[in-house]
Length: 359
Image 1 (cartoon, helix red, strand yellow):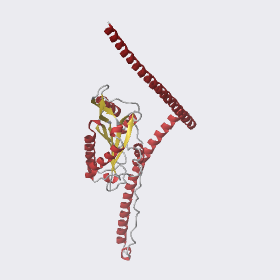
Image 2 (cartoon, rainbow, N blue to C red):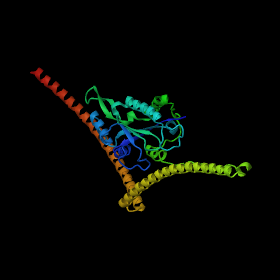
Image 3 (tube, rainbow, N blue to C red):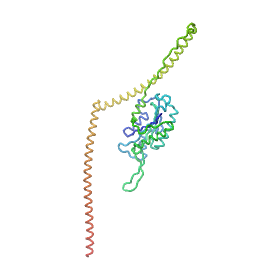
Image 4 (tube, one colour):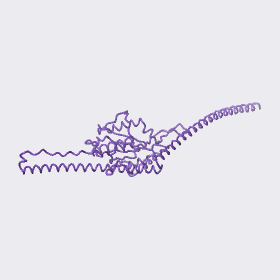
């Protein structure tokens, strides 16, 4: 049974650029086949960071520190849906099944997220077709006017409202329902299985693993009968038939070996690109920190800074608490003084009226 697969990941200012570069193939992706392409259905012609910020700006929402700017949805299905004949064949898919699946997904995304859906990219250059969709979590909320008993509707950037444990469970149910006409099934509700992060999904599920196709052994026919061996012509014809059979089988074997060689060559190129990327990252780390010991030193320094920051925050909280208590005392004293002033004013008015009466 093939399953409908929906994974999500929060996108902040820290990983917005990298997500956009990956989804639009603006950087080298080691596990992607450069001979295959991607298709952009929403947000074409603009960078993903620009699309996200444009939606936030149009909604008039404010960006707080460490705000979740978007939620990335990775949508796909079990390999056996796309290639029912051989689910292990890397990168292959049935075009009719892909079109049906794509139609269902686009309808589901646009109906559910509307203007908040800013980017939809279909990747066909990895093991199994999949969609990267970015949703900006703009929600309408009621806000009370300051000093008034009135409320207005405002747009807020709030991933906690749009993507929380409850709404994510609803998302899985709704997505499975939308994919049901294709014969796809929802995963087990409440499963204890730990889902991999989207980044790990890129590197594992879509990593090209070549399984060589076994070449059938060449089998020789049985020896000719005595009647054939007794005749030179018949024996020559039999040998010609055997030679032709061997030649045909060798041709098939060579074609299959050439196909396997092509797959292995593509895998080697993918691993070479990955190796170069890792080499570049390692060189950057060594340039910035000098050595592994340098990295450990930086980590220890950061841990010490975090510990100091915590102590400072605790001290500030204690100071705030002390100031709050002092303000409470001052406010109480102020209220007492106000009452005394009111009493004095009252007594002054009585005394004034008494003076007027005596006159």
